[in-house]
Image (cartoon, rainbow, N blue to C red):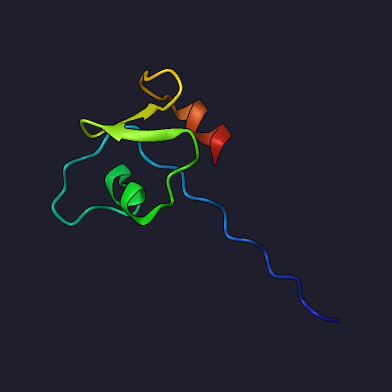
Length: 66
């Protein structure tokens, strides 16, 4: 019997960038550059915002999108 491969869960970005020099794995700036940011979200002034409303994104919003 073959083993099924589990798909890797999509990482949820932090709501704000921590401004570390090495850029952590969940950094919104890094995720935006790599193209792994969930659909409907972007980064403005190091804060994750919704593209539809332009308001600051909450953790619940990001978890639903991921």
